[in-house]
Length: 90
Image (tube, rainbow, N blue to C red; front, side, top):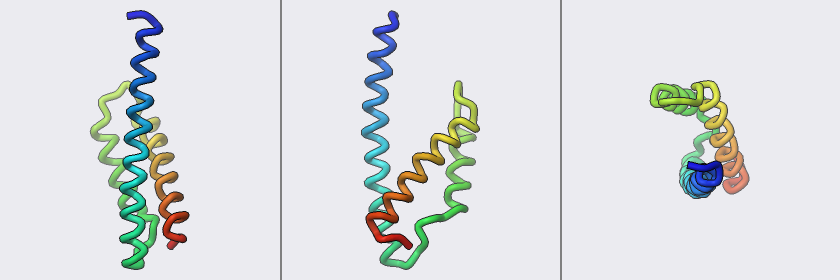
């Protein structure tokens, strides 16, 4: 394969990631609405800890677990911010 072939594949994956990130955010918003109705805090450190443990165990590489956790921390942080904005924070 050529560099252009690899770049096309990366572009395709970037578009897929974009779709998945937005799909995840939409689900987080639904969860945020439920949390608001039930008076549950947006931030759940135990849930996040379990997520990081699960993804670290499932990570086949080549990215190190620390890198994967940092990526997920960012995605989760953005989802949490979106929940707070849309549900007027808890």
